[in-house]
Each structure stands twice: as structure tokens, then as C-alpha cells.
Amino acid sequence: MPSVDVMNAIAFNGVTKKYGDVVAVDGLTLDIPVGSTVALLGPNGAGKSTSINMLLGLLRPTTGDIKVFGNGPDEAVTRGDIGAMLQEGSLIPELTVRESVDFIRRLYPDPLPLDEVLRMADLTDLAGRRADKLSGGQTQRVRFALAIAGGPKLLLLDEPTAAMDVESRRSFWDNMRAYAAQGRTIVFATHYLEEADENSDRVVVIARGQVVADGTAAEIKSGVAGHAVSFRLGSQPAAGLDALPGVSAVEIQADRVTVRTNDPDATVEALYRKTTLDVRDLQIHGADLEDAFLALTKES
Ligand SMILES: Nc1ncnc2c1ncn2[C@@H]1O[C@H](COP(=O)(O)OP(=O)(O)OP(=O)(O)O)[C@@H](O)[C@H]1O
Image (cartoon, rainbow, N blue to C red; front, side):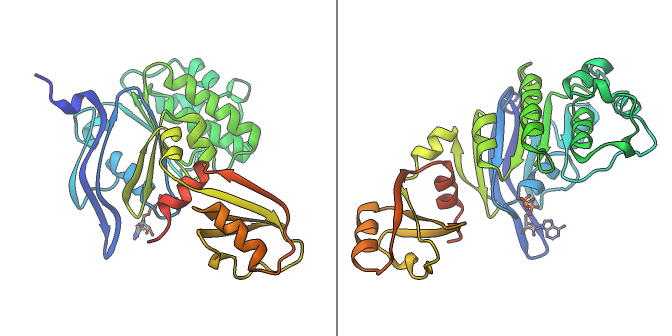
């Protein structure tokens, strides 16, 4: 009889990873069913890369246990079950795109056809180009091609769009979704709330090595009460806004100030009555994913 883990592509069971005194991952328990696309969303240092590196067997948990399709990470890698696009990783400069992709796909037991990999990564027209003649965005496409070349059942992507412009990002996510559509499991780490919202069916928010929220983007948004009050102040200093009633955070972008508040009526009243600021173009918004993210990952 198969164990319960076989139903899951990934099972973290009480996983902790320490680097000396630093607790990078802190008692993580998380199941990811086969066929889902999951975003690991978290601020810098949350433990996303450490978790991905443990899934690949590159790092061992200090305590706890990880299963990938019911096996340990090393075995899953040996079986060709996992493909990965990590934050770092350079290409062999002398090889063409086609040679690089073909080299990697031959390491897997059941790879995708070479031309299909090139097509799925938008590389057909660049197949003959040497790796050292590629732009940053093109290099990222090759790295994606290398990750899918073996046709892995699980694809791990660690901030895959970090070096891409808007257009490249869009086509990258289209390609990722096409790959996922064939029943594969995708886990990607990102800081970008929009990417998590648009490209996953589940968002796991990680902060300080722990899961602080887990659900669809809509569920996470609805779980956070809160509003944003934004306005323009021109050249007036924004000091003291964090002392207004209800305010949890103050952000300033160009001349627009946004205060996060759980009591927008009290905040706005105090803004007009208790300060001498000349406030222009005031707007009040409901909580969005960014508000939820900030509320959930705030240092306590
Ligand atoms: N090799 C290491 N030695 C010591 N501390 C480390 C090491 N790698 C990571 N850390 C620490 O572990 C914590 C988690 O880091 P990790 O890279 O997993 O986070 P992350 O969520 O991927 O962050 P980012 O979004 O910045 O990539 C951080 O405090 C980091 O400084």
C-alpha cells in the first residue's frame, strides 16, 4: 500500500535548518499535492532559498524530514523527478544553446524532445547562439530550458524572473504555465506579490523561516483586515504619521504617502484635525495582497 506521502509532490515534516546560530527554516511542515503550482512568497532572508536547496538535496535539514514524491530528495534527483532554476548558475560559455540543452536532457532518463524544450523556452531562433553571446534575459530563458529539459515532474524556480524586463516576464510565466498544464508540480520563490497572485494556485507566505499564511491569493487578502489611506503632501515633511490612530506602517513613494491602517476613519479624522498638513488627493483603498503581505511578514 502506498504511503500518504506518495499523494504529495513535496512533504516537509517539522523541518528546521540552522546555519550556526541563524535559524533559516524553523519547524516547517508543508504538503504540496501533485499538480499544484505554489508560490513561496516572503521577504529577504525568509528561508525560501534554503527550503528549495533542501528539496534538491543540496542542503540537509538540521532536524525534520523532507520527502519528494515519497522519496528522499537525493533519490528524487537521481530518478530525474526534479528540475531547478536557482538564483545562481552560469552556462558553459563555449556551448551553443542547443548543445547546452541537449547536454542536460541526456542526463535524464525520460527527457523531453530537444526541439520541444527549445520551443517551450522561446529559444528556437537562438538555438545556434553561443552561451557567452546571450543577453541577461536570454540567459534566463536558457536556464529555464535546462530546468525543464529532463521533463521533471517537479520544477523548482528560485526567483526566476529576477533579471527580466516586463515583456520577458510575461512570456516566461506563459511558458511556465504551459509546462505546469501537463499535470506537473511547480514551486517558485518570489518577492513579487503580483507574480504570486497571477501565476500560482496557492500562495505560501514565509517569514522568519515559518509559514505565516497559506491559501489562495484571495484567501490571504481576505484574511487581513486593513486599509490604505494615501495622499500627496508635496514638499511637506511626512514625520509623525505613524503616530496617527490605527496606523501600522507608512510608505513614501515620490510625493505620494501611503499609510496602512486598521481604522481609516480615525486615521483620516486625525490627519485633518490633529496635524497642520495640507493633504491633497486623498484616497482610501481596501486591503490588497501587498497589505496582507506587509501585515503578515512584519517583524514582531
Ligand atoms: N550559507 C549560509 N550561512 C549562514 N547563514 C545563511 C546562509 N544562507 C542563508 N543564511 C541565512 O538564512 C536565512 C534565510 O536565508 P534564505 O537565503 O533561505 O532566505 P530567502 O527567503 O531565500 O531570501 P532572499 O529572498 O533574500 O533570497 C537568512 O537569515 C540568511 O542570512
